[in-house]
Amino acid sequence: MSLVFSTNLTADPGRTGRWVSDALKLPGAQLVKVNDSSGIPLRGYDLSDGAVTGSGQSPEGCVATLEVPANLVPHSALEQARFDLERDKLLLEEANRKRTWLWSISSAVLTAAVTLAVALMSRSGPAASPISFSGPTAEAIEACRASLRRLPLLARSSGQTVVALSEAVGRHEAECDEVLVKMLAVR
Amino acid sequence: MKNATFIATFACCLGLAAASDISLPENRSPLTSIGAVEDFDAPPDPEDPGSGGGFDAETYFQNVVLAKVASCPEGVLREFLAWSRGHSLSLIKTVEEPAALLAYAALAAPSGVLELVYRFNATQKRSRVTLYFYSGDGSKHEPSALIELLKRYDVASLQDKLRTAVACS
Picture 1 (tube, rainbow over the protein chains, first blue to last red):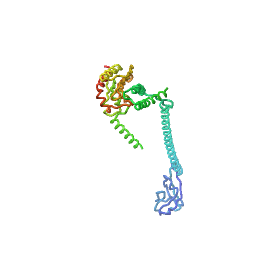
Picture 2 (picture 1 turned 90 degrees about the vertical axis):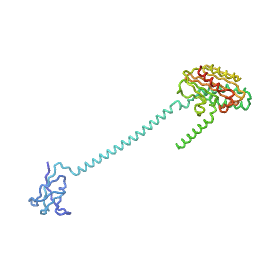
Picture 3 (picture 1 turned 60 degrees about the vertical axis):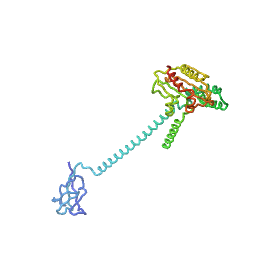
Picture 4 (picture 1 turned 120 degrees about the vertical axis):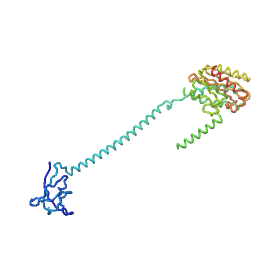
């Protein structure tokens, strides 16, 4: 199916031997014939680059008969399609940006949640409990007991002096005091 | 900042290592110490005076691996008593328990007290006998400062006997 219609031709002011009409610029337009103002057909004219060209008499005031495809899409429709395509592209890019942004936020929230969970778990351990105390080691208790048993023997040792014994008592106190404090704390 | 911390830590470790080669900490300076374990790869004994010290300390104090470690404080006390009598030393106090022993001998020169500590740990399957010397002011003295004592009382022979006694043989 095609559409056939006629249009008036006017001389191209920029070039000689060319006659133009807006209808000649339609996509797929084909020149059927050219008639003079009285309707007599003229020969030797072609349609080229949206204009009628020829070497015959000037077709000024003549009428060109054109044939265009019936499914010719209006230029505005093409512009609309192009606009729709651009809009779809922008929407897709915007959606991708939003998706990236949401992923970044989700990742940050997840990282924060894991960090908080680990911190809470470490705080809830028995070692971090403010009311928990670690008692003295068995070795420390044994050493304290040995020090206690050794002290009277040192007091009776030959050549013992008051100064040396005082130092021995001080050493015993230093060895046992912390042990006893720890034992009282875990009572 | 991290580099400075690392350098400070490294320097501190170097200082401690150097100090351990010169002298043992006071609480790790017995005249002799012999440990017995059943497993060669047993965890370190916190009472081992040789652990954490220099190479000399690790080779000076002994650790033996036995097929079975048992508690035998009476055998340890017997050997210590025999050694004391052999050097005219008198045991001034003994505290014997099923898995532990404390025995004290008085020394006149140098003036002080010898303390023998034996402990058997059934859970960890280990035992250890250690001999300390305390001067009158209650301070311990490392072996390198008591060479004369080690020679005069032949502590090496006591060490050999204690090694046998720890094995309960």
